[in-house]
Length: 316
Image (cartoon, rainbow, N blue to C red; front, side, top):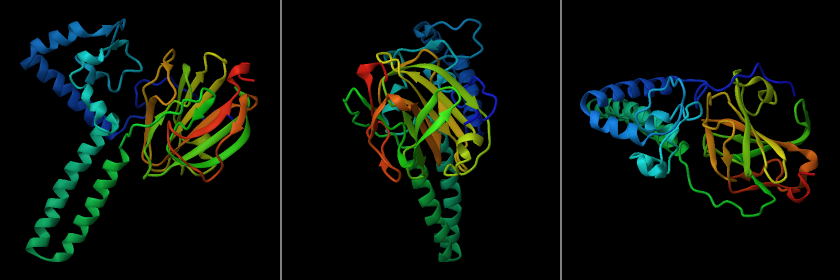
């Protein structure tokens, strides 16, 4: 398995950019201008509450909202009790999907209103596009859902990094990790697309690979598609593992807010992929003592056990 392309260090949480991200950042610039003009006291208060350090920082950070796309490349942070918008993490939806949900809802209201007016004024057939738009709106909202999960307590168990269907359970040769077990999960547009950490670990590397947008079920997508690799090491057994977020034909926006040195818990949220996509888990084959899934199985991120490892023997 060669490297897809020349890797890059992510320059933001969503390294591939995107229209919705650009609109949200434009709104962010206006919001910060507005706050500085009309609410200077709030700006000073939040500056005093800002934690951390970011030498030669190029990021304009007033409050925690301004770290949404830069938390992986900026050293500033806010304590939860100092973040007046932390409640947004408890709404049951992925925070990095708020812009998409808002824009699609506005489009639905505008187009739906036009079609309703046409149906009332001219012909009942205009109710058909209203129904179609409503179904699309419901799917968009459902797509960005982010439910809580019960994380298995078994210390030897690796949980699924994503919701979806298992498409590959195989041994492959990785140029960096050697012989590994690869478990691939296909995420349809009906699945939750928030990714989770499979095991307790420390982030050792994060690499972004620009690429194509083949269907995520295409075998070539593992090499040719845009993707982001997260390398982790389990601290007790020193067992390495890798999570790959791979874009698909529809999903073209990978989100990952991790940076090297982050310490994660099993089942912790690490990012998402917007719309249909694929997530791979790679781990050295000789570290695995039991495979708990097979091709065709439906799995839930953070809840389904994919395999068990030899943690008591140093990952061997």
